[in-house]
Image 1 (spheres, rainbow, N blue to C red):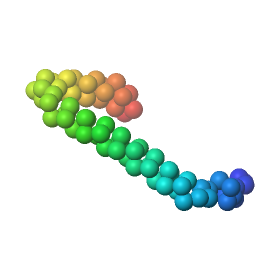
Image 2: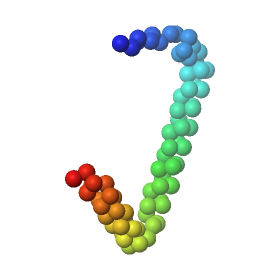
Image 3: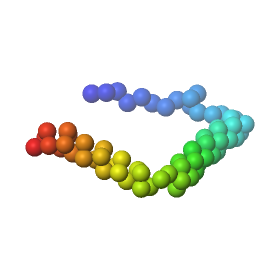
Image 4: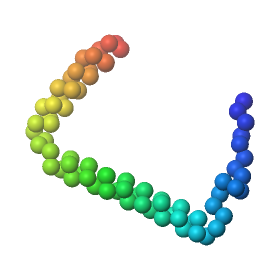
Length: 72
């Protein structure tokens, strides 16, 4: 059975400055994630859906032929 480790107080931020720094880092990380998702949304909106439809059908049929049929 695995030992449960106890969180020590030394691992936690002690001062108000450290808490503010940690919150600032969290906000910056969330902003980067949001920007990446926004870029993906724009990319998905701009792709040629007719061309990707044929590609998607091809890859799905290959997946079905190789993976799903082998499992049957």
